[in-house]
Length: 152
Figure 1 (spheres, one colour):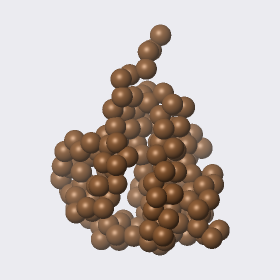
Figure 2 (cartoon, rainbow, N blue to C red):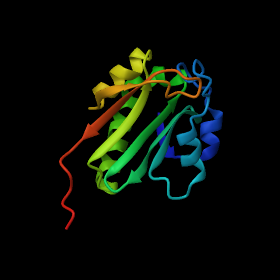
Figure 3 (cartoon, helix red, strand yellow):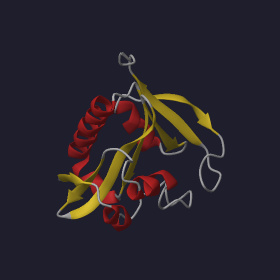
Figure 4 (cartoon, rainbow, N blue to C red):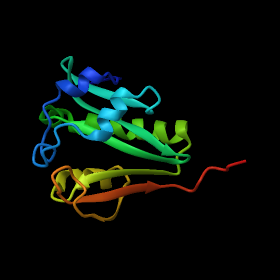
């Protein structure tokens, strides 16, 4: 697995895995904005055999808070541990570089593997977001919270 700078074409090349297809959201609005916005924050792509297998990043929402996003295809399963480690390093770098005290993410309520993975990355479930998905499906809000950086 190779980690490369994110390019919008990478996102389009990934055949989305469940639950994105389940919710009719092959491409999340946040990820599309991230792909199109120059100041959208750090983002990366995982390439397997030179082909995009996953994309992700952190979009700053306001001072100290960012929204993490990831789209992964089925090919990531072949290199799950390497992928997990790369994402953990990328999140840590984004937290430091953007001086974030909170990183949040959303996961489909029924996506058990995704929820477990977020927990392994250090995220905690905060609550149910009713009718959050594009097709009205329910999602769970997750967050990693750290002591805020000094503001002076």
